[in-house]
Amino acid sequence: MRYIPTTEEQKKGMLGEIGVSSFRDLIEAIPTDVRFKGKLNVPEAISESELEEKIYRLSKRNADFFPMKPLIGAGAYRHYVPEAEKSLLQREEFWTSYTPYQPELSQGTLQSMFEFQTYIARLTHMDVVIPSIYDGASATAEAALMSLRLTHRNKIIVSSLLHPHYRETIKTYIAPHDTQVIEVWHKDTLLNIEKLKELISDDIACVIVQNPNFFGGIENLTQICEITHSKNALLINAIAESMSLGVLRSPGEMGVDIVAGEAQSFGIDLNYGGPYNGYLAARKQFLRQLPGRIAGETVDVDGKRVFVMTMRAREQDIRREKATSNICSNHGLNILASNIYLSLMGTDGLYEISLLNTKAAHYLEKLLLKTGKFERVFDYAFYNEFLMKSKNSIPTVNRKLLQNNFIPPLEISKFYRGEEFKDVLLFAVTEVLNKDDLNRVAEILSE
Image 1 (cartoon, rainbow, N blue to C red):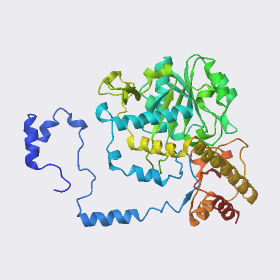
Image 2 (spheres, helix red, strand yellow):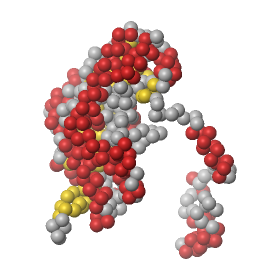
Image 3 (cartoon, rainbow, N blue to C red):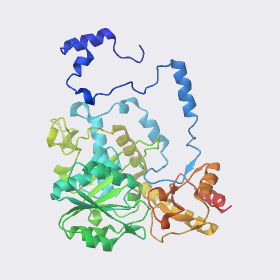
């Protein structure tokens, strides 16, 4: 009975309460031709000790991530997480914070949301921020849907250097809509500006550009913004690596209308593919079309500082079919993690770490070129990721790195086809790789 929540007697009681005699009666309204037939492919029950042994054997198949230094990013970046943050996140009162439906009982959750909004607003120079969207991919897709509602147009332009997973998510979100996605191929690792000028028209709802892009390239958002706005379309800036905001000019200063970002780099470690925490930031005039909730600050009847839910546009519990989105989760612990991280770093700390990432990436690129085993595919300005063409086979490079506790870079041909991408790797560098590590990588790959 340890894993079965209800007894047969309890089941009968519940069925009787709703007026049916059996489970089969309960599903009578479902047509028989759409019901599952046969037996589910679920293993038979095993004892607790057998289960423990099985899980242990599975866990031993995993590599120990701590001593392995990653040279891969592509939307998942390993940054150092301060011990102070880890300690504070262990406080059990933070584990249970969820959606703040009752403000009088959710002051801590609301304050955490408010502080996160403030940080992201300062970093992006945008007016309003929605925290707690599933991830950067769904935030970008929600931004695309926003643009359709705001412009009443049916075409969107997407850069081919937007993260491939983000592009696929956009296609999934807009599938029920009569919307055309126009993909603009890159030119020397940046958005093809001339092609964008050709394609921009009065029926374009938005242009979606990632910066830094999937190859780490730094886009000219000011120029892209001017072209986009020439036809009254909206410019959406997707940010997969938010640490870049520490050194790059903010999207709001360059005229971006909507920012769809991923906050994983701000104090959220990588664990089996997650967790992530997306956010949306926009101009104030787009407030009502944002798919989320905004926490605000005010005072109570006694004049004390309090926090309230200022706007809830996405909640299906109150708006149902009129809701801008049916996202209803709240990544409370992830928001808190980013708050603690950004509080500890401060403006100067975030700048220093971002600058270190940039310098370290350029340092590794120079070392790899000196080995004679790599060459540039394109010459472009980048943040902390860059492309390198290997003169050795990719399996050889991967084997050498893994044998020396480095997670290999991304083989770019998995996402981009063409002769120019054959044997090309996408390297990522963060502060977890010190100078000795970078020298060691170059030494290993020069052999």
